[in-house]
Length: 143
Image 1 (spheres, helix red, strand yellow):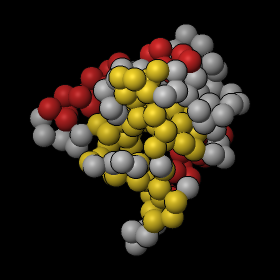
Image 2 (image 1 turned 90 degrees about the horizontal axis):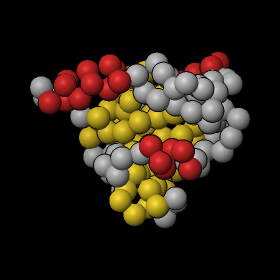
Image 3 (image 1 turned 30 degrees about the horizontal axis):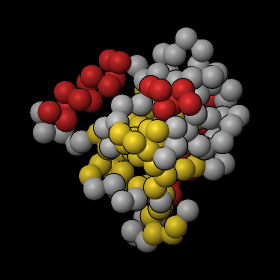
């Protein structure tokens, strides 16, 4: 399994990461079968948004409702580590549900994809997965 995202969407998320620094950004990824078709920015409601992220519960609940009503499924989440690596933190692992959803982590230059699992190799919660970008004509290029 890999995470596919358009190069334009990934570039847009990197710009948002840079613009919001030093605060972390966050949001939802929508799509099917590992292919991101849309994203929704969420307010970071963490007490310390420079060190942590928490997706606004109202945004998450609305997306879950929309999915239940036949809308596009939530594929996963994205957030930034503007002053760090694109590897999940211990806090990320402690807060992640083992729901097999994707986690896209960005730092303004690099990005990496992860899957939240029951017994992941990273902090017992995440497994690294390939991140692949596609262009407007559907071409892919491994990242």
